[in-house]
Structure formats: C-alpha cells, structure tokens
Length: 207
Image (tube, rainbow, N blue to C red; front, side):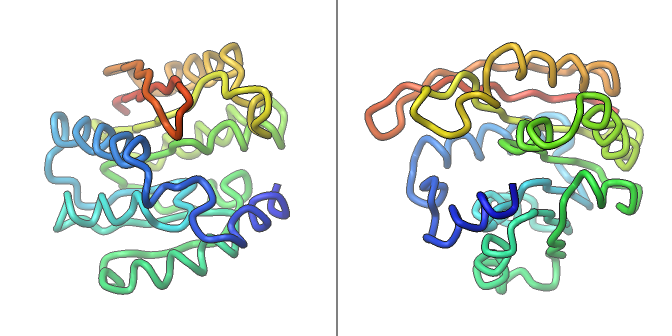
C-alpha cells in the first residue's frame, strides 16, 4: 500500500484534489457539517491527509484550530509540509500507518476527519483489525466530538480502487462506525468529475 501511494504521489496532485471543483466541494461539504454541529473546534485529527489540500480548507475555515495530519505516504507528506508552511504553528504532520499508530494518538480531539482512506485500511488488514483500529481512533475523540468521513462508492472498474470501494464494503464501514459512535447524518451526493459521474457519501457520527 505504501509503495502504491508513494508511486501515485510521485506526480503532483494525482487525484486533482487541488484543481477539481468536485473535490473542493466535497471538502466544503465536510466542513459545513462541522460548522453546523461544532463550529469552533480546537483540535482536529485528519487521517489520510495526503498532500494537505483539505487541510488548507480546515485552516481557513477554523482559524483557531490545531490540526494533526496523518498519512502513510512519505511522498504526500513531503508536499504537504511545503503547502502547509503558512500554518506551521497550527499543524502537526505525522507520517505513518493508522493501523499502527492509532493506539499512540493523544486523546481529546474535537473532530476527526477520516475521508477517502478507511477503505485502504480495510484493504490491508482483516475486518477484525479494521474494527479495532476504528475503535482506537474513536476513543481519541472527546465525548460529544465529531467523526466525519467522506467515501466514494463503486468507483468504475478501470480505477484501481474499484474493488475496495464496492458498495457492500462501504456499507460495512458505515455499520462499524455506527457501532462505535452515534450516527448524526448521512448525505449521498452524485456529481460529475472530468466527464464521469461518481457517488460519494458524507457521514457524521457523534462520540
């Protein structure tokens, strides 16, 4: 998984997070869920932060928040370090596999954003281990805090992530999260990106 992601991120912005209105809208929709329910978070955990594009949205929207970013790709983190220099006093970047480092995270996050990444965890470890890691992450969120997760569903078969985003698997992850925190909202979006139609869901859970 590390080799695959490092190879992808060897080219800048491989999924067009920075330039795609589809991706930018997805970030804004997640931020709006936070604003509606917890408008002034002090500590945010972002799992699968990639090159820090969504992190910039968080920095701009929540100007008092401190954000801890975790990503498994060294290539992505190298880009994120440069992109996030203007917010260096508020951002902590951790390179690592959430399956390993979840148990070492500090407690007390107001918000955890775990988007477009949980299915990578599910692809590399057992379902039992996936659930255990989810539980470790949720336990680091304050009581009353939020877990936000956006996940693409049923990517086209010519995309490498097609198998791991199959709808039954995504539904399984939703069920697992729902057993660890209280479901607060679940929105389904069908939008166009680069001439193709995609579905993604934005979930919110309360610890």
